[in-house]
Amino acid sequence: MKVHDLVFVDTETTGLDSRKHEIIDLALVRVRQTWEPGQKPQFALIDEWSAKIHPEKIQSADPASLRVANYTVTGWTDAISIKEALQIFSERTDGAIMVAHNVAFDAGFIDTALAEQSLPNKMHYHRLDTVSMAYAKLHSTPDVGRYSLAELCKHFGIVNESAHSALSDARACFELFKKLMEL
Image (cartoon, rainbow, N blue to C red; front, side, top):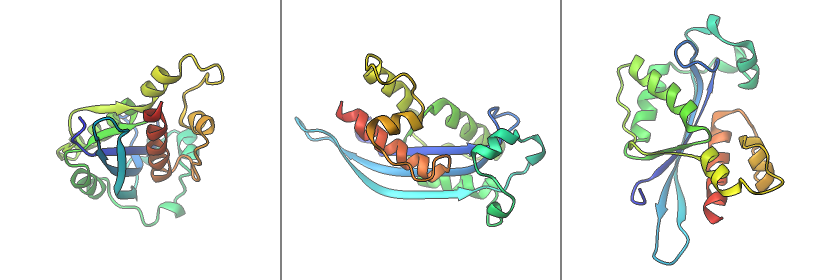
């Protein structure tokens, strides 16, 4: 796992069910990891990308999810199609290990969307979850009772300037990952 790039991924969606809702904001932060014997790992940013995606099934969207994602029709005027976004995503994540905060959620939406578009998932099969990592490292820390990205960012002093936008959350996940790796 140490020889693969890491790709921090975040999605914003129109709901919680990947079978009926869809991705409307997708981002990645790709990082090269370097491991030297006896030293802490080093992480170098090599790529960032995000896209707003034009919803195709907006009628099935959960209004609460749209509010969380800050979705507006005018804010998505330059959105691209899901197929175009996933083609770019697939190329930029080739061979990398996916890392996300609650990786099962994002991976579920990405896997479903890739399958619906008949596109390959080129990421490495391993996946890392910062929620699980945080729980493993912080379970006995008295002032940590919740493991949301917002709460963990607050705990570590990480600034997430635009929470619930995919790129900002992917960046925050990368910063959280680095803090957890130092513990």
